[in-house]
Image (cartoon, rainbow, N blue to C red; front, top):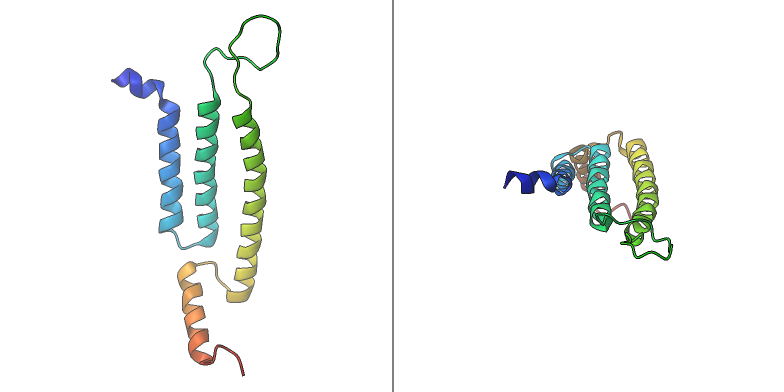
Length: 129
């Protein structure tokens, strides 16, 4: 039983990182912390795909004429693409947080909602004339 748990340590790490990232996103009101939580969750998905793509005793798929077991390179290529997309979305999210900070003076979700509600009360027609 213990050997089975230890031999699959990477899957336990994935589960811990997924739950940690999800917890940070749900429990925190700070927008930067939410982005960090999303990045942690995203990293756990990367580790999952890389772990599933690993073949014990597998080599790079280079044909040498000898019968060998090959590892599939597709999951690794997809993860490289996902990392680039993840960096771009993180940069966009942080840029939006900067603009929100400039507009509302805070990056706390509760304070932003309070400011939005007070703005709606002061403008009963939604700001239209």
